[in-house]
Length: 296
Image 1 (tube, helix red, strand yellow):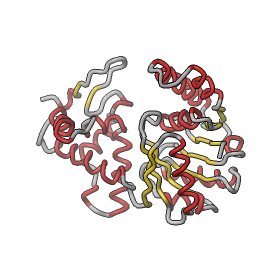
Image 2 (tube, rainbow, N blue to C red):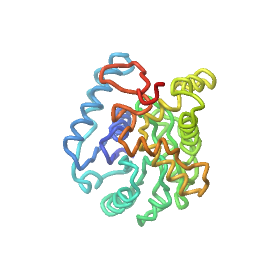
Image 3 (spheres, rainbow, N blue to C red):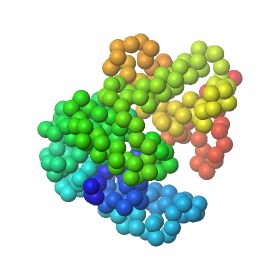
């Protein structure tokens, strides 16, 4: 397995492309937007420069990594020689189903089709193709070049040999693969999102303020980041989407999103990417400042 195609040049897509390319794989990075591809290459180079400054890579590794990446705006051209395709687009089921129908048509018949989805059913995605046995979840964590975990999700029809291939491949990337089965939220988000939701409920019900909630979890439970700050980092819209998947999938009211979260997303307060969520984010500042909306 040498030729990798990554679909989507956003935060996760460029990180996945970076990691594969740095480990010697030829990567076709595909996105419908040429400006997004250019931005992705700039981000990858910036992150490589950061690694270079820390002396974790050499200048030769940086140069070779960039040479290993080719960009495409045409999906069929980008995947026609792929051994593995990793889809890393937005968490939209209709979009993913359409992409996998196209991948099934354009990618070689023996190619494995993986999705970086954090919550959408692998079995449902696989059903959009004629190669369900070769469809699998490959859920990387953000930031991809730094985080060690890859959550590997077997759909109902995923072949054992495909699962083992992806485990071995993940290890070659220097990652730690954890294999799970296809149920709503898998493991990472099935456990994480209810915790985040409960933290938001605690704020909503006036149990404690933003800083207190995060400090309790950081100092009391040794979490590197509090749940409200983490929600901002993930994106409150993404958190809401995953909670809706859990709620719909299990039909259990314990997964119902907090009304405060719903209101914040509706109003466009999405966390770090919008400049404000539970905290306020100013360009160039690393200070953690609680949003004025939650300061009493």
